[in-house]
Image (cartoon, rainbow, N blue to C red):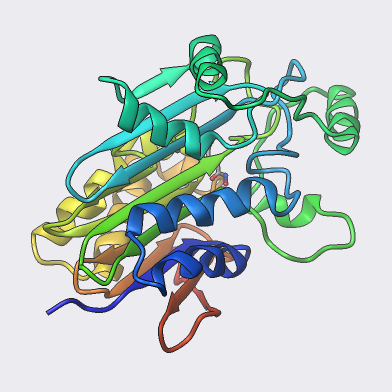
Length: 301
Ligand code: SD4
């Protein structure tokens, strides 16, 4: 029997993003349409410096966006280092549905988006520009744990990359992950979010996983794939996320003290779990019973 529709996503802005996804899921819409709608909300619904429009730029001042989308049957599409297009998740979906490829990057991704009818626009807001100019004074790239929370003047909410997993009434799953990546990254840097298996992985036979935090750690560990494979071996979503975090720590114990890594997983039965390297990670859960649950994840340190 189907576990019933459900959507989960990373961080506290996952609550409104889930609601956008629920408008689709609650009406019997597909998990794929739901995660696209939820991710789109995050990309333009709110200026949060870490996703879509208003993302902070790289060290040379360019806002570059990464996104991936995946269906539980293995279909997937992604864009990396995409500029001037404010809905990278929808471009990723077009890559999946309209090309023989999985990942388009940079200028080619933009060309494809424009050919598909997306309107290019300047995504660098005056606020992002000001933050970048401020950063240029020291020009030191040093990601801090959960820094987005502190970067928001007068706003204690925690905002970050959105990773979203959904299961439809028909029991089929999908996931989406979208981000502007690490602020002030090197030009050309691509994180985990658009890399299938690192920032996102979904398999209808098992479940899905997504990640937030410093993407280099997810890339090193093929992390979302690892979480799904751990669930395939019989681990609960929470245990799978914890074991994957332990792997991250074991590989780079010193570096692990300095960076945040967070995993969120949902298995095909609709069970949800999460684990983070450091405190501060929260995730949002939405189903027919409750649309706005926000839960804190356990952490290692
Ligand atoms: C990245 N994982 O580009 C993303 C960014 C993120 O918390 O999640 N930041 O590495």
